[in-house]
Structure formats: structure tokens, C-alpha cells
Amino acid sequence: MPTYVYETIPKSGTEAPTQFEVFQKVTDKKLTKHPETGEPVRRIISGGIPLGPKKSGGDCCQSQCSCD
Image 1 (spheres, rainbow, N blue to C red):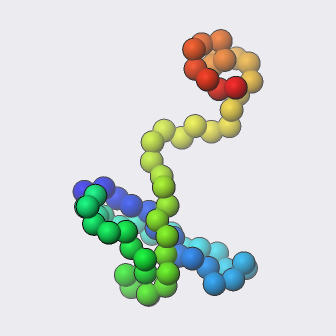
Image 2: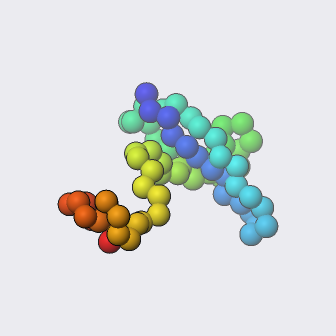
């Protein structure tokens, strides 16, 4: 089962979202409310290899990757 990251949707611009993880089947519907507090939530897309900032020059741009 994959782990999905969710965060609360702040009610104001000064409020910080809170992130949490949930184990769900791929076929399960995404959450719309925090399971404990009932606050509205959104799922965060995450995973894969962190890319970081693009480099200019160096070994990466001399290879066949597309870091431009």
C-alpha cells in the first residue's frame, strides 16, 4: 500500500498547513477531511528522485540529460 502525504488547507494566509501521511490503497478515494480533526485537506504529490536546482555547465550539461 502506498503512503500518501496530505496537508490541511489553512483558513487564512497567516495559518500554516499541517502535513500528515496516510497508508491507502491506490483504488481508495483521496481524503477531503483530516481523519481526526475534520479539517479540509488536500493530497500532496511527492516521491521520485529530488531534482534540486538546475545546474548550468558542469558534467550534467555535457551529458545527454536536459538540465537547461
